[in-house]
Amino acid sequence: MTMRSVIVPIDRANVDTDAILPKQFMKSIRRTGFGANLFDEWRYLDPGAPGKEASLREPDPGFSLNQPRYSGAQILLARENFGCGSSREHAVWALRDFGIRVLIGPSFADIFHGNCLKNGLLPIVLSARDVDALFAGVERRPGFSATVDLQAQVVLPDGGNAMDFSIDADRKKRLLEGLDDIAVTLQRADRIRDFEAKRRRTEPWLF
Image (cartoon, rainbow, N blue to C red; front, top):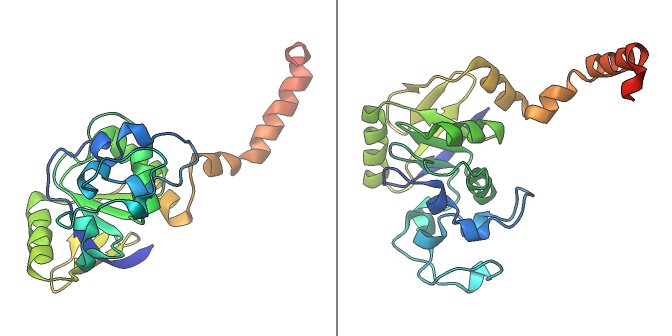
């Protein structure tokens, strides 16, 4: 996976999952349809409610996701402890549904970090110094972008030096191959069927 994108900043520490997707919008388990309410209380000037048409609402022009310079961004730049709070997967689904594919920050809440990896979203942990440099680049130049190379485990910002990042080898493989937990399990479908057949023979009373 290699991608290049404009970087959109959220320059706040300790952004919790209720800020990412407020609880009143968690009305489905279909993983789609949540992007319209991503950062709802920060993104709009009027209060939101489930079923309220986003196109009819008043966006806050001061919020980064509403600014034309960040249009189409697939990389979100965060501060420390992004994704803290409750363990809702819906927060990750909202980010993906909006179009975010990579998160970059100095730290992420543990459960949120795991939820990202399980749902095809890449959370990249960089040093505070590197994150500060990216925020400075975003502030300095409209359209500031970066290339993310998962295979090489590197972030290459416009006009800057390559920033290496670490990732668990198994998680990296899953992201590169587009595998979730179910897909990984199905790769062993033959062994599962063999086990079930053996159990039917040796313990038929269970069936």
